[in-house]
Length: 90
Image (cartoon, rainbow, N blue to C red; front, side, top):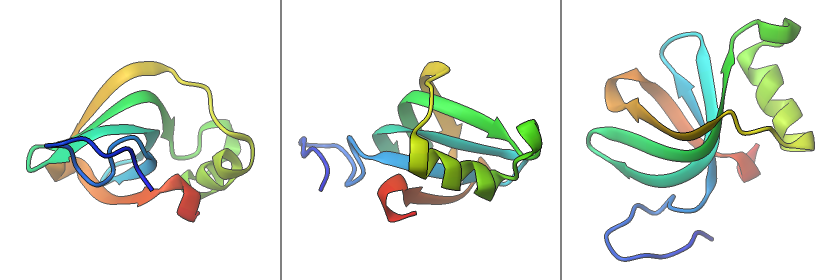
């Protein structure tokens, strides 16, 4: 269950996995989501193949051991988002 605030998306406060249409996958805490895209806090970006890990292998590892934030805030435009899922559902 997320943190409920008026005028925020259902994912507000939830750590999410944002798969992009490119080689990046992003993990962070959702601040808000709207027609423009998704706003994340305390996020990390993984490039497919970095460290010998595919995007999905990276997500599986993060689900087990967590991640180090590399960005305080990120915005991912809607047109670059392939999918969004809760990290807790991985």
